[in-house]
Each structure stands twice: as structure tokens, then as C-alpha cells.
Image (cartoon, rainbow over all chains, first blue to last red):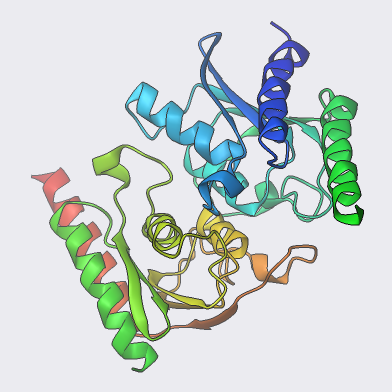
Length: 153
Length: 153
């Protein structure tokens, strides 16, 4: 499977979020060539500030593997991770992060800051960015366009 | 109540962690002059990378108040928050953070980096640091000293 093929699975999750009126961000975690965890942003449904797609996916993966060390896991997410999710990725020792769209308003893997360039942490994942960027970004643009329409009417 | 008095409650939580052989870090969240949430680090017990004291306390507070917006809440924690927890505090719009010991190995409120100086986020809490610093720090030192002894014997 290529990064693009895995990212399509994360995009599927993002679309589920949109259907539930949540900001469309989706995430999957891959281990040994299999998806062990899928999640989408559920902040509003759960009224939980930590219910970002990445955090939910990491929590599921820890439960599935029975360990907090996700050392041989790769995380695919449609949007560049925020500070909380970048931190959770570091804490989980995830091997590789692959993200789609860049987030100038909160992204901590290069856009607002690059947390992975800060010295002193226990772990630094590899990062690939801009995978299926347009599709990931269009999902978000479409969602917010629709939201603005709803507000006006 | 003073910051020191609230911090003593967070220290109580940290001691509970130590009793369970977890790195002793404790946290409470105060809203309207009352503690609405208490938690201690449970990463090993839960085998969950996100089970830091602050994340568990934030999740409890959201459930208690029925909202992800913890706007009038103050968070007391015995150790300077890591990137994940600093991010969760930003995401939760917590009003004020009061921490005890500084963390040169992961602290993101000044020690390794200062995430609150990064531009572009939606929210920035006020921070007071070094409250009951010695007591918070001694708890950690004692814990790791004991661990090293156990390893040697």
C-alpha cells in the first residue's frame, strides 16, 4: 500500500466527521501493514476538548496493542497535527506521521511552529506531509463554506 | 484559597500516583472556587500514552461541566506540562495554569520551549510557575532514586 492509499482511509474517516457536523479530520494508525485504529474528530458530539481524531486513534491503538508504546506504528491524518496531537504522537513514540493538508492556524509540524525541532524530548517521529493535500484541504474548505451559508440564512 | 493551598491538593494526587508505582504527577481543576476534577498520572496502569494527569483531569472536567470549553477553569499541576498537555490546555481554553516543578526534559511552558509564545493559536492561558516547587520536585527525585535502587538490587 502507498501513503496515498492509506491516506484515502483517513479521508473516509474525515467524511464521517463531516456527516455528523464535526470539522472533517480523520486519522488511521497502521501497524504491520494493517489498520489497527480509525477515528474522526468528535469534539462537539462528545463535548470533549481532547476528542481530536489523532487522540482518539492513539487511545484505540494503545488499547488494541495493550501498550502505550506505539513504536512500530504509522499515523495518517488528514490535517497537520495541533500542539496537543503532536505531543501525543511524541509521547506514544509513533514511528512515522503522514499528514495531508497544512494548518496555518495550529499546525505544529512546521506551520505555526515545528515541535519536532525542539530539543529534549524522548522521541521524534519521521514526517511526510502534503499527501492527498488537495482532497484533505477541500473537505475542510467545503465544510466551512457550508457553515457560513447556514449562518447567513 | 491561595495557589499554594490548591497545589497541595494536586500534590496529594501525585502521591497517589507514587503509591501505584507511577511517576508522581498530580493535577486538579478548579472552577468557581471548587475542585471539579482530580487526577494523577496513570500511563503504566492504563498502558495509555495519553493518560497524563492533566489529560485525565481535563477529560473529567469536560464531562462534569458538559462542555469542551473550560473557560473559567484553573488547572494546577505538580510538573510543568509536556507538549501534549500544554496543547490540551490550549484546546480546552483553560484560563490559568499553575505548575510546581520545572521540567527540563519536556516542559513546554518555558523549559524546552514556550508553546504559549507561538503565534496563531485560538487561546493562551495565563501561567504561574514554581508554586510549591521544592515539594513537587522532591516527590519526583525520591521516586526516581527509589527506582534506581530497585534496579541495582
